[in-house]
Amino acid sequence: MDRGGRGTLPARHDALGVWDGGRFVVVGGSADAPCPPQADCAPGHALTDGAAYDPATGTWQPIAAAPVALGPGDQLIAAGGRVYALTRDATFLRYDGAAWTNLPSPPGAGQLLDAGGTPVLVAGTDEHGGSVDAAFDVATSAWRVLPDDSLGPSFNRMAVWTGDRLLLGAQDLVPDPGATRPSLVRLATLDAALTTWSAPTGTEILHSSPAVAAGTVVWTGTGSADGGQVGNWGRSYPEGGMLTVATGRWRPLPPAPRPAGPLPIDPALSTGGRVTVGGHLLDPATGGWLRLADPPGGRRLAATIVAGPDLVFIWGGAVHRDAGTNLGDGHLLRV
Figure 1: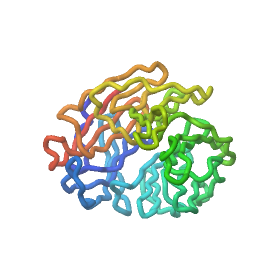
Figure 2: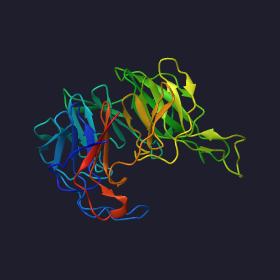
Figure 3: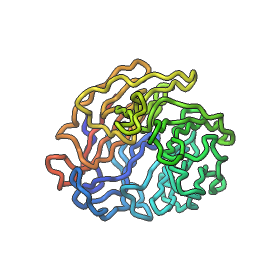
Figure 4: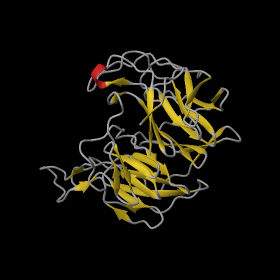
């Protein structure tokens, strides 16, 4: 790992981060003491300031402070050369490299993602009724409600952009899911124009976090379940698997290295043709692993971890052995 250098930001944890196409943008977070592992802490005081790190030059540059505090539970993405933030209270912002702009709030809550340059909001569940998916029209600064997907009522809805379509995975919304049979992920795709859904298809996997690399969607869960003694399903089903988008071919995940690596389990990251599985990096094309050691100084708690095209950027947080002290430096892993 290369040293990412000290930033222009004071030390903090749980900052939001994103690769904007040329730099790692870091904004918000908290300068309060991080919450210890397995503890239940009240939210810290969130921050508004930010900075961008250019890995080509190894330099930081301050960015304009966000108009609202940003922290855990808020989302940050890059789409179409701009950065977008969505807060838990539905404040929607755009950063164009010079200033932040307040934009209309989306018509619901959910996962914010880049769909080929278009910010898209995918509702996480239909459990409460009335949930919608929507796309943000950059030209008109307005949200457009997307057509209802072909899966019907569902929960644990998660989507990824595969390069030419939006792939949605979800589980059927039925009474007591998993009580008598496994609640498996079903899939549907929305075309590049974001207008037409495909017919649904089934899978043999349980829910986990997906990521895309090398033309493959990888559901990154390494566990499995069989329903237990009561309501046993008759066999074990995996949480994860690999789908080749062009052919529809499924493959199982290879066993992950032990112990688990330092990268996050959820959300999964994609970089250099690999995805994070079990804290290490899996090449879905070959099934080979890039086993990762802890970063210099030790594994970090509540750090900002962002994937670039062939880089993983780790900044801030706190080292586990000294969880009460925030850090103001970071490291780069070149994949």
